[in-house]
Length: 363
Image 1 (cartoon, rainbow, N blue to C red):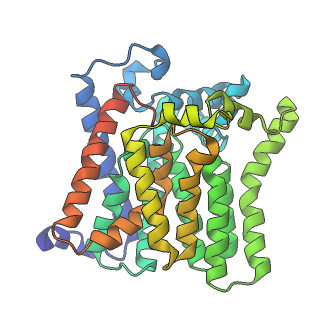
Image 2 (cartoon, rainbow, N blue to C red):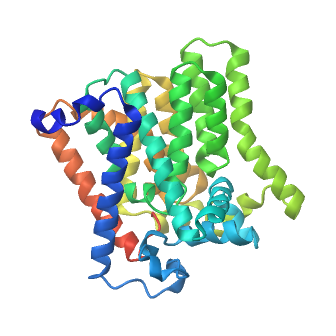
Image 3 (cartoon, rainbow, N blue to C red):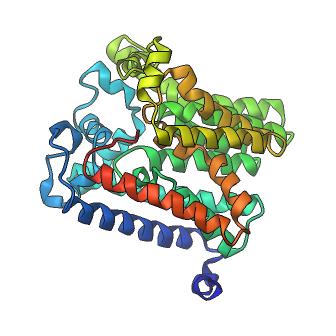
């Protein structure tokens, strides 16, 4: 193990270089597994499951289910109310990249991959901030994030890598007491995904724990809210429906009101396991770092308040305190850490194979 890590020893203080190397290795492994499993496992015959307009790229298996919707929005805008469930920052970036690269699919993938590098950079910085400075600790900590069961979405045409970049940036800057930067990155998060609003209480509590001034905490929250406020304003002007994305979520059986029936019909074994992990994270962090505990609590309440477990494993990829908890608990265990990483990696491979074949969009 020490011989392996000695190769990267010189990168210990070069977070960007380390982030690039890890991201390239992870993306390559994901593409390799997805591509070759696709040659064996028949793809989903449902044409709505895959982006079909660029088969010559041989990367269409990385744009399933929600992925084609983001590309469609980038090219044609919000042509119906159902699409408003997909927040605008990722499609906007795709649209910008299309002018440079021409290919919508490649543009979407490049954005995801670049954002993954940025997300890993901040993940490494956060690990160092919370006392894990050795290269071995950093790499082992990052692996638990990447090989979380739904880590495939960090390399696909989904918002996960962009959301991770924004959310981790906001968390890092709040831990460093840089409230304006924390608010700016939180604003990117709220323009990327509905769950971006969870970042606002996270950075507020982190800043409060650091005894920052009230006006600084509130300023960070206001700036962080601008992403979703801007989207609401756009929907109000363009459609006359400022909360159209809420109605779109109801169309996907979220917030439908028939909670018990919907929850029972949507919950799976992996949902239950991850729900238990999130619950454990709340308990673990409550006496150690309230901000992490409350942030985990929001993900614990998400399916209960929304009335649906659909997509829950994918959403909880952003529940970073869960991964931090697992790392802190098992990093010094010669058996525990490899076992946790192995179990998580097996489920990760399962999700990659099924996603590449078009059989799962993250649920």
